[in-house]
Each structure stands twice: as C-alpha cells, then as structure tokens.
Length: 307
Image (cartoon, rainbow, N blue to C red; front, top):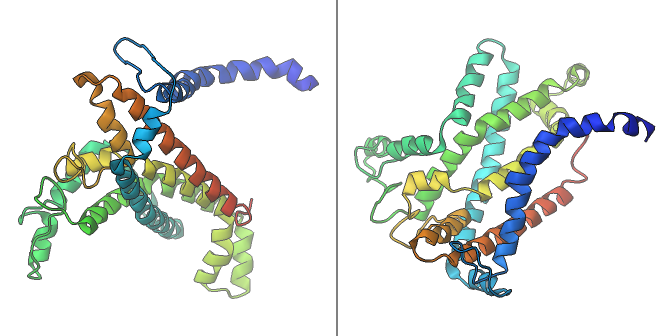
C-alpha cells in the first residue's frame, strides 16, 4: 500500500491513454447499445428515445431469421475453430523442429494476417468460382466431376459447399496469429522436460501429448476463446464470398449473426431510424450468448489448464 501511494500516480499516467481509448471506443458503445436496445421507438435521426420496453428484444427473439443466422454462425464456429487450432498447432510443432528457412515460412503464414479481409475473400471467391473455369472446378473437371456452385451469385449454393469454403477461408486467415502464440509458447518451454523424455525413450507423439500439449494448455485456452469470439463475429469474409445478401436471394443462406445486425443497421438511412433499436437488441443478445459460451469454456477447462 505504501509503495502504491508512492508510485501509483505513475501507473495511472501510463495507463491513462489506453483507458481513455477503451472508454471512448469500447465501454461507451457497449453501454449505449444496451440503453438503445430498451427503447423500441428510439429515433436515430432526432436522438429521441420514446418509451422504455422490451419490444426490440421480442422482435429479435421471435424472428426465425435471427435464429437461422445464429445457427449458421454456430455451425461455422463448430467446424472452423477446432480445425484451425489443430492445423495451427501441427504447423507450429513442425516449424519449431526445423531451423533452415524458419523465418521464411513464418513470413508466408503471417501474410494473411496483414492482408485486407475483403481482398482476401475476393481471392477465395476467384479460386472457388462457381463457373466451370474456376480453379477448383477446373481441377474437379479432371476427374469428370460436375462444377460446384461454391460461391458468388450462383442459382444454388449447397450448404456443405458454402461451409467448406468459409472453413478454408477462416482456417487460412487465422493461422498467423495462432502460430505466433503457439510458437512463443513452445519456445518458452524448458528444454529439460524434452531431455528427460528423450532419456526415457519416449516417442515424439508421446512427448507432444504428455509434455508439449499440457505446457501449452494456457495458450490453447486463450486461442480457443479468442477464436470462438472471432468466429461468432464473422461478417466481412462471408460478404466478400457471397455478396451483400450473404447467400442466395434476399433471405441470405449464409447470413451470420453480425450480418443480421448489419441488415437492420443498414435500413436506418433508408427511412427506418427505429430499426437501430432492433439492431442494438440483436447485438446485446449476441454479446450475452458469446459471454455464456466463453464462461462455460473457461469453467470446463479450469482443471485442464496447467500454469
């Protein structure tokens, strides 16, 4: 306490810039969104609130399109997150075991992290073009397989094809950050554990399962939580692959939960300012849903993480 009284002002000065940024761009928008969601008649143009009520939440929770969007989002999360973590972990182990060209391969895997998401999605839209001359469809033609409507404004995009493309996109786009975290974790493990395992004659797989993975468990938990949150916020990738409607027609076959929110937000300037309350309510519901999933994830892994 005496030390804090003496030097606490230094910590406050050091933290002040970041705290100000968090208050302005994070805490205030969250609180303001929650307030707006409880005023169904809120008018964005005139900043009038109207009467307090739960009408916006009722519209969101009773809207089948919202649950469909949340279901599509959950499906993307269930498919893409485990695959991306496993692939990133395997690549990290391989990168850590080789010294020649390690920096070169790290740069290759890091490139998607600094590439614009829309531009990256357009590249994937070209690779998975629904036209017969698309790269993937061209490769399928070598085996006499009919072209598949993977992306774009195709007449019909099968659900499995769309989820496959989104999964490949999500895995490749998220590899860089995961690899950096896992690589820093592996390089921080004391070498004496591996030396002891080598003396005992343990196989590489057993060393990975009994030494590397348990000591990497804090990083795995961190990556799992951030990946879940990021996957639930998916929007730009789906737009770049399937257009503004996020699928076929106005229904949006691959509309995500964030896409559902943006759908109402986009109607504010089109004569529907009250829709901001609906968008805010949907955002709060998604926030609570992600909060519950994150809490359950941390509770489940509480005894499985070794610090």
